Length: 153
Image (cartoon, rainbow, N blue to C red; front, side, top):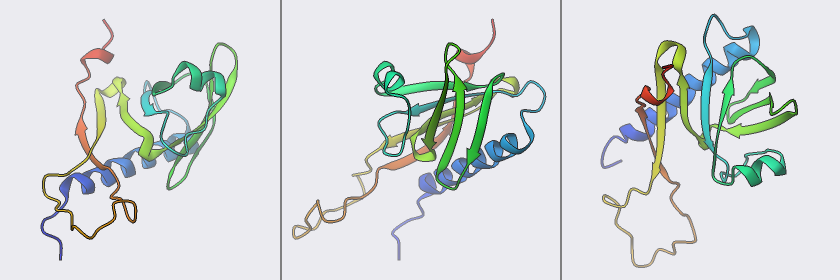
């Protein structure tokens, strides 16, 4: 039996599910009204696929905009792929949900931020445990983002 309810991880999964649902709908029906998304993701997470020139330009983090021009938006249980236009160069991207750090829709002042941190306060390591045998995955928390930096002036 668990020592406590891991609300942070539960919230993390729920918010990833929300993004998955929204992107699936947009993939099937297009963006409604003035909706558009700023999605920031960690380019170092395994499973991220992007052109070498983009990876060299954004070695740690990248923000993409899904608004006027995007194609081939395909959403799976693990993430999504999309083709975006970078200076008249269409480039496919594959972004796992675990790589997403922020998801913002400034048209309705909605945003989520996902933070990664190691939760070592409540965990005790056994002296006989080998840390390489079964490392714990990073703990993710979800929280609402302040939208001030995305507001139109």
